[in-house]
Image (cartoon, rainbow, N blue to C red; front, top):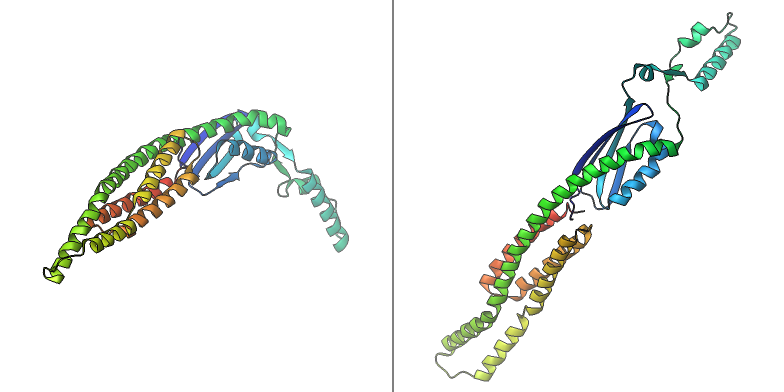
Length: 294
Protein backbone atom coordinates (compact mmCIF):
# COMPACT_ATOMS: atom_id res chain seq x y z
CA UNK A 1 0.00 0.00 0.00
CA UNK A 2 1.27 3.45 -0.91
CA UNK A 3 2.06 5.45 2.24
CA UNK A 4 2.14 9.15 2.93
CA UNK A 5 5.05 10.62 4.87
CA UNK A 6 2.67 12.62 7.09
CA UNK A 7 1.47 10.94 10.25
CA UNK A 8 1.13 10.86 14.03
CA UNK A 9 1.30 8.01 16.49
CA UNK A 10 1.21 7.64 20.26
CA UNK A 11 1.49 4.77 22.75
CA UNK A 12 1.80 4.39 26.51
CA UNK A 13 2.91 1.61 28.83
CA UNK A 14 4.63 0.82 32.12
CA UNK A 15 8.13 -0.57 32.56
CA UNK A 16 9.60 -1.25 36.00
CA UNK A 17 7.30 1.11 37.84
CA UNK A 18 7.54 3.94 35.32
CA UNK A 19 5.01 5.04 32.75
CA UNK A 20 6.52 5.62 29.29
CA UNK A 21 4.74 7.76 26.70
CA UNK A 22 5.97 7.64 23.10
CA UNK A 23 4.79 10.24 20.56
CA UNK A 24 5.82 10.33 16.90
CA UNK A 25 5.21 12.99 14.27
CA UNK A 26 6.38 12.70 10.67
CA UNK A 27 6.47 15.00 7.65
CA UNK A 28 7.86 14.65 4.16
CA UNK A 29 11.60 14.59 3.68
CA UNK A 30 13.92 13.49 0.92
CA UNK A 31 15.55 10.87 3.14
CA UNK A 32 14.86 9.20 6.49
CA UNK A 33 15.71 11.48 9.41
CA UNK A 34 14.89 10.41 12.98
CA UNK A 35 15.09 12.91 15.83
CA UNK A 36 14.90 11.49 19.39
CA UNK A 37 14.08 13.22 22.66
CA UNK A 38 14.08 10.82 25.58
CA UNK A 39 15.00 10.44 29.27
CA UNK A 40 18.52 9.56 30.28
CA UNK A 41 17.43 6.07 31.34
CA UNK A 42 16.85 5.20 27.66
CA UNK A 43 20.13 6.56 26.29
CA UNK A 44 21.64 3.04 26.05
CA UNK A 45 18.73 2.10 23.75
CA UNK A 46 19.11 4.97 21.26
CA UNK A 47 20.80 2.87 18.55
CA UNK A 48 18.28 0.05 18.98
CA UNK A 49 15.32 2.46 18.76
CA UNK A 50 16.65 3.99 15.54
CA UNK A 51 17.38 0.56 14.10
CA UNK A 52 13.82 -0.64 14.82
CA UNK A 53 12.38 2.48 13.19
CA UNK A 54 14.70 2.16 10.21
CA UNK A 55 13.19 -1.27 9.54
CA UNK A 56 9.68 0.22 9.25
CA UNK A 57 10.29 3.56 7.52
CA UNK A 58 12.26 4.47 4.41
CA UNK A 59 11.62 8.22 4.06
CA UNK A 60 10.37 11.13 6.13
CA UNK A 61 11.45 13.40 8.97
CA UNK A 62 10.24 11.73 12.16
CA UNK A 63 10.31 13.49 15.54
CA UNK A 64 10.10 11.05 18.45
CA UNK A 65 9.36 12.27 21.99
CA UNK A 66 9.61 9.80 24.88
CA UNK A 67 8.57 10.71 28.42
CA UNK A 68 9.05 8.67 31.59
CA UNK A 69 6.86 9.31 34.65
CA UNK A 70 6.06 7.51 37.90
CA UNK A 71 3.33 4.92 37.72
CA UNK A 72 1.12 6.70 40.23
CA UNK A 73 2.53 4.87 43.28
CA UNK A 74 3.44 7.43 45.97
CA UNK A 75 6.46 5.46 47.15
CA UNK A 76 8.03 5.23 43.70
CA UNK A 77 7.33 8.89 42.91
CA UNK A 78 8.94 10.19 46.16
CA UNK A 79 11.91 7.82 46.32
CA UNK A 80 15.23 9.68 46.49
CA UNK A 81 18.88 8.75 46.32
CA UNK A 82 22.10 10.40 47.42
CA UNK A 83 24.18 11.99 44.71
CA UNK A 84 27.37 10.61 46.21
CA UNK A 85 29.87 11.91 43.64
CA UNK A 86 28.52 15.44 44.18
CA UNK A 87 28.51 15.05 48.00
CA UNK A 88 32.16 13.97 47.94
CA UNK A 89 33.02 16.96 45.78
CA UNK A 90 31.16 19.33 48.13
CA UNK A 91 32.95 17.83 51.14
CA UNK A 92 36.40 18.16 49.58
CA UNK A 93 35.77 21.75 48.49
CA UNK A 94 34.51 22.78 51.94
CA UNK A 95 37.66 21.37 53.57
CA UNK A 96 39.74 23.20 50.98
CA UNK A 97 37.98 26.45 51.98
CA UNK A 98 38.72 25.76 55.67
CA UNK A 99 42.42 25.27 55.00
CA UNK A 100 42.74 28.15 52.55
CA UNK A 101 41.13 30.73 54.83
CA UNK A 102 41.89 29.09 58.20
CA UNK A 103 38.22 28.73 59.08
CA UNK A 104 37.35 26.93 62.27
CA UNK A 105 34.52 24.46 62.70
CA UNK A 106 33.62 21.12 61.23
CA UNK A 107 31.84 20.26 57.99
CA UNK A 108 28.57 19.04 59.43
CA UNK A 109 25.74 16.92 58.12
CA UNK A 110 23.44 19.93 58.36
CA UNK A 111 25.75 21.87 56.06
CA UNK A 112 25.92 19.08 53.47
CA UNK A 113 22.21 18.31 53.26
CA UNK A 114 21.44 21.97 52.63
CA UNK A 115 23.51 22.03 49.45
CA UNK A 116 21.93 21.79 46.06
CA UNK A 117 21.25 18.41 44.37
CA UNK A 118 22.57 16.34 47.25
CA UNK A 119 19.33 14.36 47.03
CA UNK A 120 18.08 13.37 43.58
CA UNK A 121 15.16 11.22 42.31
CA UNK A 122 16.11 7.57 42.44
CA UNK A 123 16.45 5.93 39.03
CA UNK A 124 15.79 2.24 38.67
CA UNK A 125 18.95 0.90 37.16
CA UNK A 126 18.24 -1.85 34.66
CA UNK A 127 20.27 -3.74 32.16
CA UNK A 128 19.68 -2.44 28.59
CA UNK A 129 18.46 -5.87 27.46
CA UNK A 130 15.82 -6.01 30.21
CA UNK A 131 14.79 -2.39 29.65
CA UNK A 132 14.46 -2.99 25.90
CA UNK A 133 12.29 -6.04 26.52
CA UNK A 134 9.76 -3.91 28.39
CA UNK A 135 10.01 -0.77 26.27
CA UNK A 136 10.06 -2.24 22.74
CA UNK A 137 6.33 -3.23 22.73
CA UNK A 138 5.42 0.39 23.54
CA UNK A 139 7.66 1.61 20.73
CA UNK A 140 6.17 -0.94 18.32
CA UNK A 141 2.64 0.20 19.21
CA UNK A 142 3.52 3.84 18.49
CA UNK A 143 5.15 2.81 15.19
CA UNK A 144 2.05 0.82 14.27
CA UNK A 145 -0.20 3.79 15.02
CA UNK A 146 1.79 6.25 12.92
CA UNK A 147 2.06 3.73 10.10
CA UNK A 148 -1.72 3.31 10.19
CA UNK A 149 -2.19 7.03 9.72
CA UNK A 150 0.44 7.18 6.98
CA UNK A 151 -1.32 4.34 5.15
CA UNK A 152 -4.70 6.06 5.45
CA UNK A 153 -3.22 9.29 4.10
CA UNK A 154 -1.58 7.21 1.38
CA UNK A 155 -4.97 5.85 0.26
CA UNK A 156 -6.28 9.39 -0.24
CA UNK A 157 -3.11 10.34 -2.11
CA UNK A 158 -3.38 7.28 -4.36
CA UNK A 159 -6.99 8.08 -5.27
CA UNK A 160 -6.10 11.66 -6.20
CA UNK A 161 -3.04 10.61 -8.20
CA UNK A 162 -5.00 8.01 -10.16
CA UNK A 163 -7.73 10.53 -10.98
CA UNK A 164 -5.17 12.99 -12.31
CA UNK A 165 -3.45 10.28 -14.32
CA UNK A 166 -6.83 9.51 -15.95
CA UNK A 167 -7.21 13.17 -16.90
CA UNK A 168 -3.71 13.21 -18.39
CA UNK A 169 -4.38 9.96 -20.28
CA UNK A 170 -7.52 11.45 -21.82
CA UNK A 171 -5.63 14.56 -22.93
CA UNK A 172 -2.77 12.48 -24.32
CA UNK A 173 -5.13 10.28 -26.33
CA UNK A 174 -6.79 13.42 -27.65
CA UNK A 175 -3.39 14.60 -28.87
CA UNK A 176 -2.72 11.20 -30.47
CA UNK A 177 -6.07 11.31 -32.27
CA UNK A 178 -5.43 14.86 -33.46
CA UNK A 179 -1.91 14.19 -34.79
CA UNK A 180 -2.83 12.69 -38.23
CA UNK A 181 -5.06 15.62 -39.12
CA UNK A 182 -2.30 18.11 -38.24
CA UNK A 183 -0.32 17.12 -41.34
CA UNK A 184 -3.39 17.28 -43.55
CA UNK A 185 -4.28 20.72 -42.19
CA UNK A 186 -0.74 21.91 -42.77
CA UNK A 187 -0.83 20.66 -46.37
CA UNK A 188 -4.11 22.49 -47.01
CA UNK A 189 -2.86 25.73 -45.44
CA UNK A 190 0.39 25.53 -47.40
CA UNK A 191 -1.44 24.85 -50.69
CA UNK A 192 -3.90 27.70 -50.16
CA UNK A 193 -1.08 30.08 -49.22
CA UNK A 194 0.98 29.20 -52.28
CA UNK A 195 -2.02 29.62 -54.56
CA UNK A 196 -2.69 32.98 -53.02
CA UNK A 197 0.88 34.13 -53.54
CA UNK A 198 1.28 32.73 -57.07
CA UNK A 199 -2.14 33.98 -58.22
CA UNK A 200 -3.25 30.79 -59.91
CA UNK A 201 0.07 29.59 -61.35
CA UNK A 202 0.28 25.78 -61.54
CA UNK A 203 1.85 24.20 -58.47
CA UNK A 204 4.73 21.74 -58.41
CA UNK A 205 2.93 18.93 -56.61
CA UNK A 206 6.11 16.95 -55.95
CA UNK A 207 7.77 19.96 -54.33
CA UNK A 208 4.66 20.58 -52.25
CA UNK A 209 4.59 16.97 -51.08
CA UNK A 210 8.25 17.18 -50.21
CA UNK A 211 7.65 20.20 -47.99
CA UNK A 212 4.74 18.45 -46.33
CA UNK A 213 6.88 15.36 -45.73
CA UNK A 214 9.65 17.46 -44.15
CA UNK A 215 7.11 19.17 -41.91
CA UNK A 216 5.54 15.82 -40.95
CA UNK A 217 8.93 14.39 -39.98
CA UNK A 218 9.88 17.42 -37.87
CA UNK A 219 6.54 17.49 -36.08
CA UNK A 220 6.15 13.74 -35.56
CA UNK A 221 5.36 13.14 -31.87
CA UNK A 222 4.61 9.42 -32.07
CA UNK A 223 7.66 8.40 -30.03
CA UNK A 224 6.90 10.95 -27.34
CA UNK A 225 3.32 9.74 -27.03
CA UNK A 226 4.45 6.10 -26.80
CA UNK A 227 6.98 6.93 -24.07
CA UNK A 228 4.44 9.05 -22.20
CA UNK A 229 1.97 6.14 -22.21
CA UNK A 230 4.71 3.89 -20.86
CA UNK A 231 5.45 6.34 -18.04
CA UNK A 232 1.77 6.43 -17.09
CA UNK A 233 1.64 2.61 -17.02
CA UNK A 234 4.73 2.48 -14.79
CA UNK A 235 3.24 5.13 -12.51
CA UNK A 236 0.08 3.04 -12.08
CA UNK A 237 2.15 -0.09 -11.43
CA UNK A 238 4.10 1.68 -8.67
CA UNK A 239 0.88 2.83 -7.00
CA UNK A 240 -0.53 -0.70 -7.18
CA UNK A 241 2.65 -2.29 -5.79
CA UNK A 242 2.46 -0.20 -2.62
CA UNK A 243 6.21 -0.15 -2.01
CA UNK A 244 8.17 2.93 -1.01
CA UNK A 245 8.10 4.37 -4.51
CA UNK A 246 8.37 8.10 -3.90
CA UNK A 247 11.78 8.52 -5.56
CA UNK A 248 10.77 6.46 -8.60
CA UNK A 249 7.59 8.50 -8.99
CA UNK A 250 9.65 11.70 -8.83
CA UNK A 251 11.79 10.40 -11.68
CA UNK A 252 8.76 9.41 -13.79
CA UNK A 253 7.21 12.85 -13.34
CA UNK A 254 10.44 14.44 -14.58
CA UNK A 255 10.36 12.21 -17.66
CA UNK A 256 6.69 13.03 -18.29
CA UNK A 257 7.56 16.71 -18.13
CA UNK A 258 10.27 16.26 -20.75
CA UNK A 259 7.93 14.36 -23.08
CA UNK A 260 5.13 16.92 -22.90
CA UNK A 261 7.61 19.78 -23.44
CA UNK A 262 8.86 18.05 -26.59
CA UNK A 263 5.31 17.47 -27.81
CA UNK A 264 4.57 21.16 -27.32
CA UNK A 265 7.71 22.31 -29.11
CA UNK A 266 7.28 19.96 -32.07
CA UNK A 267 3.63 20.56 -32.76
CA UNK A 268 2.41 23.92 -33.98
CA UNK A 269 -1.24 22.92 -33.70
CA UNK A 270 -3.42 25.15 -31.52
CA UNK A 271 -5.58 22.34 -30.15
CA UNK A 272 -2.55 20.24 -29.23
CA UNK A 273 -0.98 23.29 -27.59
CA UNK A 274 -4.06 23.70 -25.39
CA UNK A 275 -3.89 20.05 -24.35
CA UNK A 276 -0.18 20.41 -23.58
CA UNK A 277 -0.93 23.33 -21.24
CA UNK A 278 -3.58 21.27 -19.43
CA UNK A 279 -1.23 18.29 -19.11
CA UNK A 280 1.47 20.53 -17.63
CA UNK A 281 -1.03 21.86 -15.12
CA UNK A 282 -1.97 18.33 -14.03
CA UNK A 283 1.69 17.30 -13.83
CA UNK A 284 2.37 20.23 -11.51
CA UNK A 285 -0.42 19.02 -9.21
CA UNK A 286 0.91 15.46 -9.39
CA UNK A 287 4.39 16.65 -8.40
CA UNK A 288 2.99 18.54 -5.44
CA UNK A 289 1.08 15.49 -4.20
CA UNK A 290 3.90 13.06 -4.94
CA UNK A 291 6.25 15.01 -2.65
CA UNK A 292 4.47 13.36 0.28
CA UNK A 293 4.76 9.75 -0.92
CA UNK A 294 7.18 7.61 1.05
